[in-house]
Image (cartoon, rainbow, N blue to C red; front, top):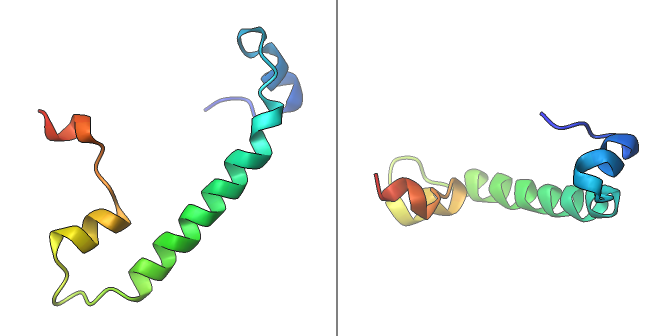
Length: 65
């Protein structure tokens, strides 16, 4: 996994990635909150593909195998 320090971000291809950390972690937190709500509201006995894909989406490139 990548180095999460400011030093590691500065070294990465000469681009300072530290400016993106805050946005990344905010969006990750929002996505986890959304996933949690979808899981809590899921009726396991009647879940359909659309509900399951909303919780754990499969990237389009995986469907092309």
